[in-house]
Image (tube, rainbow over the protein chains, first blue to last red):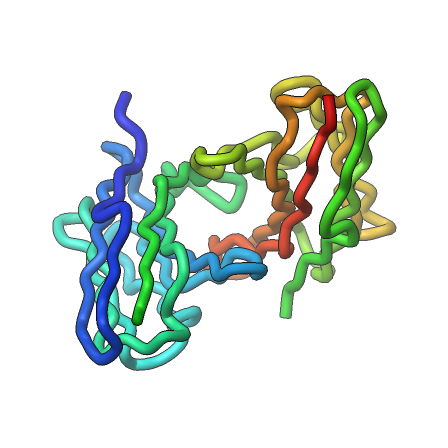
Length: 115
Length: 115
């Protein structure tokens, strides 16, 4: 079946602009995660959605970052007033949501460059 | 707070050499442990995971890892590497604490295998 897809694959924007990144999880997966991978850094957790529960937003670095998940499927990560330090690869993952041992399946990522 | 340490940041080996990548985590409770791999130009994908039971876990492509609870370690091993094993390797941990299902990641180890 189809894996996790993300769009766009690359996004170049100017400092101060808003950007939206999209994630389509694997069909039937109730859990969805956003991570950020910066050059030379590990993966940084941003936000986690599980079914209809309130999302875990504990990893969002500032109030410029927000995410929503509509209908329990597609998710959009929005970064307002982008800064150069926001440049990174943004990864989305989904899982069955059955527990801590779930395998997370990753999308190809969106490479964001803020000029 | 949970953390994951990968001790080797860059490893260079010749084909047929043995591989061991170190991973230590800090968390006293029940954990699930993962190794993910990212081949050049590809998505992150699961290599193997420890959920419960036998602490020696076998994964794809001849990789294995051993969970040693007393040492808080989950080292990755392969007896004989191939050029195609050139990739970035990430160790990650998740816990059963509450509804927290986010993965905590190490910084990754870059493996280059020379033919």
